[in-house]
Length: 109
Picture (tube, rainbow, N blue to C red):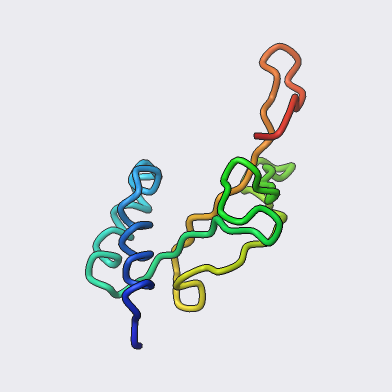
């Protein structure tokens, strides 16, 4: 595959972010070497149709499913470099914040 300079930059930016390296150890061990070798590509999903690249105004939501096993995401992203070839996605979304006293969702951030 032909990879443009922009797409290579996005791949490097995503694979080098602090949040990425703070993920589960099993995922890190499996992913870092394949990202570094170029076997696997990563992408960065921030920009939204109504928010642009302003992370504080994104509308995409991620909520834990009832079983507590994974997050369900709802929203739209646009202009994702490497989106068509990536296997690892860093997706920006807002999640509910629970009130520690009541256990109920207070707000989404």
